[in-house]
Image 1 (tube, one colour):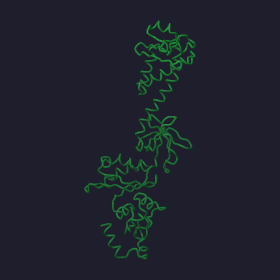
Image 2 (tube, helix red, strand yellow):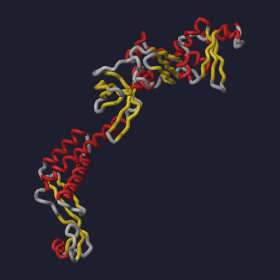
Image 3 (cartoon, one colour):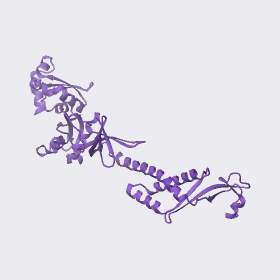
Image 4 (tube, helix red, strand yellow):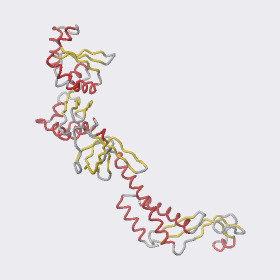
Amino acid sequence: MSSQLFDAIENLSKEKGIDKDVLLEALEAALISAYKKNFKSASNVRVELNEETGNMRVYSRKIVVEEVEDSQQEISIEEARLEDPNHEVDDIIEVEVTPKDFGRIAAQAAKQVVTQRVREAERGVIFSEYIDREDDVMTGIIQRKDARFVYVNLGKIEAKLAEAEQMPTESYDIHDRLKVYVTKVENTSKGPQIYISRSHPGLLKRLFEMEVPEIYDGTVEIKSVAREAGDRSKISVYAKDPEVDPVGSCVGQKGQRVQAIVNELKGEKIDIVQWSEDPTVYVSNALSPSKVVSVLVDEEEKATTVIVPDYQLSLAIGKRGQNARLAAKLTGWKIDIKSESDAIAEGLITTETYSNEEEDLFE
């Protein structure tokens, strides 16, 4: 056989990043299959490849017998002893059975099998590369879209952005470049499948990690994220070092850091609040930008009653209850919001309580 086939395998290995041994094993399997198919052999055969000379040889395993009944699987003791006088009956020996024109037939048969193995190996390489990108942000270019998905090119593979993972306020046009959050990487019979999101809370978290050095190096920690994609989000942050302002770090000078993220999310409003282990303070912070008079905590039910000034009630609840809903999701506490006058009328607080607690919360 010409050495061209081995040269082609060497080039494929380098071009596709596939181990050459994997391709050689595929070639051997293809040659064995071709031999059995074209020469109607049912016996066990072995292919020997010589990369230096470019040659190949086919060997058939046969049993040494006194009288041959099946020439494909048996060899006579006389013929066996021509090769080696020490052979005995029932020995298993290898006999070269390489046909003269086997190189041409084998090359044709090998092409399809090797191509299939290359495709499988490529899929494995791609899967290995992208499985480590789960829960990470990648940048891609929109290639096409249909009724179910927007397909985003991530380099070596096309990822699927499902309708449920899209931002309702965002349009997706061919050739648009955008950052996406990788939610899942699967290895299927059709090859690796990557699912991405623009609405996942993880996207917001990763964008802050990319934009804020203090988060990336661990000085500032993101404690929780609550998001209604395309509209509004809340993120709570914390710093162990009292000298570090976690909220200020995320906002950046003149708001540059948070504005970069807002721009990436096409104008989505982002509230950055300081985390606290004290639910009274944490819930109060989470209801930003509303002012809070008092927070009554029920530890057993993990519920809070939040009293706000009358003129702040609608702001605290938010449009269609959004501010309160996001605050509850962010903190993990149930939040019931009442106006100051209603709370006094119900006996939840007194005017004196209001004055003292307001001072404590906003001193």
